[in-house]
Length: 147
Image (tube, rainbow, N blue to C red; front, side, top):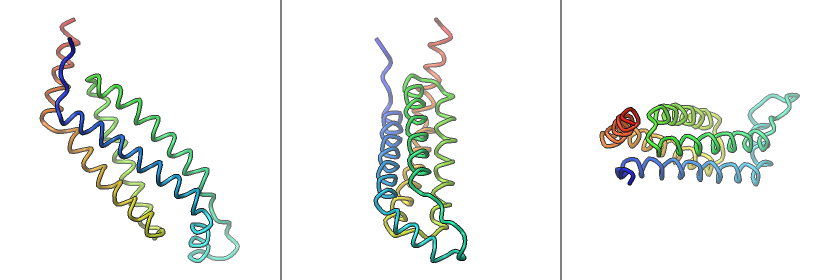
């Protein structure tokens, strides 16, 4: 019979899944509003400079983030402490990316999604480093060494 996961671990996993969902919505919005993004970019940059292609970058970034997060969640759920550290670093990179997005003054819906993502990142880090989560991971490490 396996150990029971504390609520903080379950909440961390749900928060990570919510972050993946926000990323999916943001990627879909990038596809739908590509013309608007290009128009805004062109209005803020000198003529003669090609606008970036937003959709391929957004799609590759989303799938890379989602697959990495999914693999790390599996290890985290299994009690691997290194996955907690990797999820924290991933949250930090996503938070940094959201700050970069906000500096570009994107359309309002992108701002709302970036703020939501940043808040979810902070919530995720809180649950990842919660006392109950630490005890769960410590117990998993002890169980693995006693085998």
